[in-house]
Length: 341
Image 1 (tube, rainbow, N blue to C red):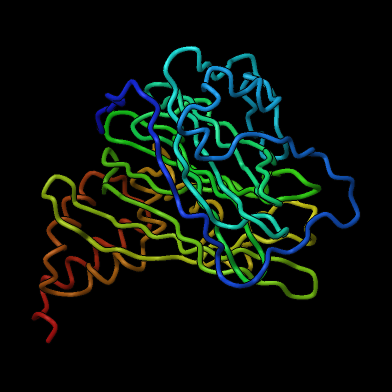
Image 2 (cartoon, rainbow, N blue to C red):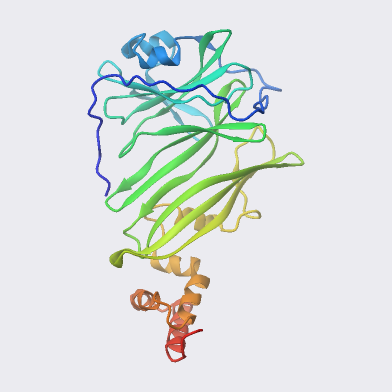
């Protein structure tokens, strides 16, 4: 289990960042056919915020936003009862200077966290005509082990704000989630949720997993986001890697006003196993055998494969399903045959 490491600093972290654009293309205009729901509010610059001007305990009033945390529901936002209270010691850091908005000028994202980084707020700021304004914000109500992050993902003329943070954890397990937002009607809207990375060393075999964005596709109005889902399986007891593989997962939508959803026809893994393998406390031994049967059969068939000893011990503890029986037969046959050349 990873240990919790609270910040030792009791002061505001003064950080500067380059306000650089992503590539030469401009983000697409997403405000056609709707009335903007966000009003740009004049405010301090990103550097002023991290330097405590105005003081962070007065920042929400200055920006005209509530201290109550606003949580994404996957389809929008709901305001809870808890607050991000900077009456104590908060700290602010510039975490991105990449372009997210279509308009010219500069964009910047400032993360404001409570003292031990367990509660954070990300402020999306935009500068035009030398004036900084608040565009929108997103909150991270509970973090553990590491502070939340945001980044701007870009593909062709599209931009997304991606927030990564604590999704669950405990002894031997950890999960970080990723939520994708895009500008729509002048405000940030959630359009996709998925696993970011994690591990489950309590499982047999242990696994470490992550996801990476590959590409964006658009065809006849249908939009798709393609990801690589990477998993490494390990014999944890003997600290020996078994294998690593990557599957393709695609999320699609019919129009730009809807959320992205799992696309089974374009993915190389079923939604059932994407939800089990790339999560924690979710994949039992028989699920694993079904998911990885072809790979396990290759190990069982290959005489002299050093992983056969692990496989034999692993199978001995399982109930006799058709898959388990087939693997045991293959193992017994391979040990009677000369090693493959």
